[in-house]
Image (cartoon, rainbow, N blue to C red):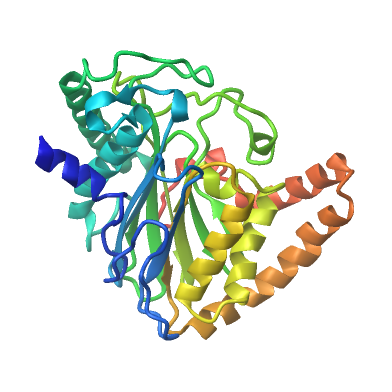
Length: 365
C-alpha cells in the first residue's frame, strides 16, 4: 500500500510527468530561459488556496509528436471525508490524484498514433477510461472505508471520492496542423488558443446548462463528475486546427474568478506579450491568476508550430490587440452595464464556445 500512496503523491505533491522533457513541479515548472521553443514545449501553472491542501492534480507529457495534458479538481473541499490514517487528507485530494493517475496510464498508448476521428470512434475510449476510474476509485474506497468515519455535505455534493477531470490527447505529427481530442467530466475545461482566438472545446457539466458567462455569476451544481459510486459519464470532443496553436487544460480555479470569458483570453495573451520566455510567461500567468483566484487552480499548456518565443508572441499580437479593442476595453468602460457586457459576450461566443453541431462532425475536417 505504501508504494501505491507514493505513486499518487508523486502526481502532484511536488512533481508531474515531463512536458517537452522538462520536469513540471507543483507551483513552478522548471523551464529553460532561452527563446527557442521545441514543438510541444509548455508549462504547468499550479497554485493552492490553502497551503499544503491543494485538491487539484495534473499530469502532462508532450513533444513534437503530440502527447497529453490532464487536470483534475477534487470536489468537496474542507467538508469532504478526511482519512485519519492518510495524514487527514480529504476525499477530494485523493480522488483528483487517482483520476489523474488513471488518465496518465490510459493516454500513454495514444502517443504517436492517429486519434479518434469522430465521437463514434472516441466513445469506446471514453468508456474504457471511465471503467478504469470506477475500478480504481472503488478499490480505494473499499480499502479505506473505515478510515473516514464522517461525511459532511458541502455544496449539495454527497458523492464518494468526487472529482472533475479533463484530458487532452494531442496528435501533432502533421507539420501544418494539429489534432486534439478532449475527454472530460465536470467543469474542468479544455481549450485551444490560435491566432484567431481562444476556443473552449469542452461543455461544463452543470445543472441548468449555463453558458461560460452565466457560470461566472451563478453557483450551479455539477450535474456530472467522476466519483467512486460509478454514476458518471465522460464526454468527448475533438478538432483539427492549423499550427501555430496552444492546447490547454484548466481547472475552474484558473478561469472562474475573472469577470468575463474574454478576460481569461486576454490574461493569457497579455502575460504572453509581457514575457521574455516560456518560463517568464509561466511566472507572470501564475502570479496574475493567483491574485484573483479564490480556489486551487491548475493550468497545463503546450505550444506547437513555432520555433522561438518571439515568434509565438508575434503570431498572437494581432489577436490580443483586436480582443482588447473589440471586447475587453468596452466592457471595462461600462462596468455598471451588465446588458452591454452580455451583448458583447454573445458576439464573442460565436467563435469561442463549442456548438452542438460540431460535436458529431468529422474532427479531421
